Amino acid sequence: METLFTKIINREIPAKIIYEDDQILAFHDIAPKAPIHFLVIPKKPIRTLNDLTEEDKPLAGHLLFTAQRLARELGCEDGFRIVMNCNELGGQTVYHIHMHVLGQRQMHWPPG
Ligand code: AMP
Image (cartoon, rainbow, N blue to C red):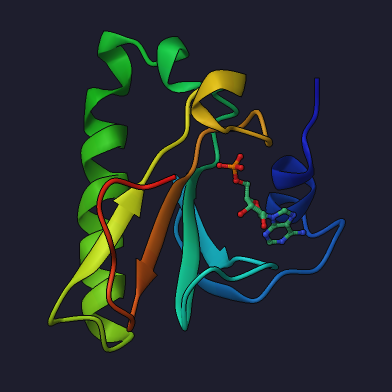
């Protein structure tokens, strides 16, 4: 089933896009939980982290490396947090995997 992130990829709904290539898209979260809060998603519609397969290993690495690079470019070189929520118990609301990248404020542990 198509999620709203597929609609963002297809430009059917607007988003503040930061980066795009043939495999991934990064855009600012619509309800930021930190001064910097953006999402990095694969264009391939993978529902949850549990649905990642061996063949997705290079894609997962590309997501992580791009998140790190964009965090640095957006002024989070002193520290940031990456979060991936998996399924309802993990707090996932959009069933198309995404990395949250949060920065420019002090993070606390444990998260809620
Ligand atoms: P999660 O709860 O981990 O599934 O995260 C979903 C995230 O998507 C939330 O942080 C939402 O604020 C964000 N979100 C929902 N709709 C949009 C949208 N149209 N544009 C950007 N971010 C969105």
